[in-house]
Length: 172
Image (cartoon, rainbow, N blue to C red; front, side, top):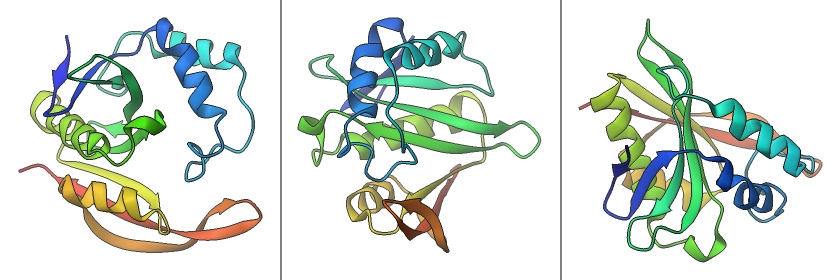
C-alpha cells in the first residue's frame, strides 16, 4: 500500500533502501540541519530499517519516492505519536540533492499529514526546524504548517547554538 501526493509516493521502508540512507546520513550537506553528528555505519542503517518492522499507529515510517520515476529521494516518519492527545512529530529528509528545491519536501509534508489526519486520526502534527533553514520553513508553510514559537538555542551544531522554530498543522 502506498500513499500518493502530487509529486511523491510514500511506501513502507525496505531493506533495499539502506544504501541510499547510508549515503544521505553520511553526507554533511544533507545532515547540516539535522541532529546527526556522527558518521553512521551501513550496519546501523540496516538495523534501523530492520527495526522499522510492521507499521503501527505509534510507528509510521515511509520511504519517499518520486511519483513520476519511482526514484527513492528521502524518508519521513511520525514519531512520539500518542493516542490520548492524537499528536505526532514529523521527521522528513529529502536526501537526494538533485531533488532539492523542486517541491518534493512540501508534497511529502502534505502527503504524510493527509495520512496522519485521514488514516490514523491524528489532530496535530508538529515539527522543529532550525531557524536558519529558510527553504525548509518555506516548504512547511506551503504545506500548511504554522509557526508557533521559537526555542532559543535549542539546536547545537558545529560548535554553535541555533534557534529552532516550532511549527504545527492541525487536522482540517
